[in-house]
Image (tube, rainbow, N blue to C red; front, side, top):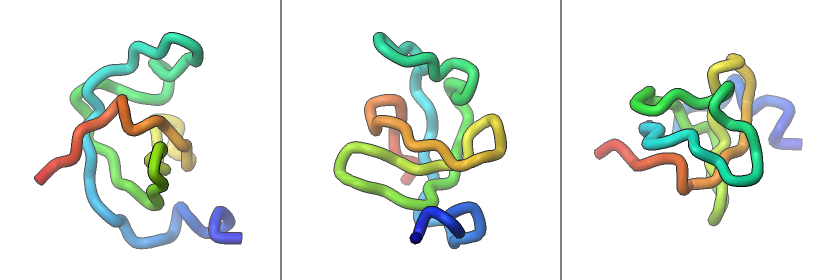
Length: 68
């Protein structure tokens, strides 16, 4: 039930969106290239972030680069 409190969890790290050009899905409404996002959870393939809708969304790691 971790998904019930993701929005309130501590930020793991920050990432920057590098593109919003999806082949299969529409993500340009939820991601802005160049914008930094707080990662709330992470799996092998996805980052779970608070996106432009101010809600948690899961996105492929291909759209982002880690900020060091």
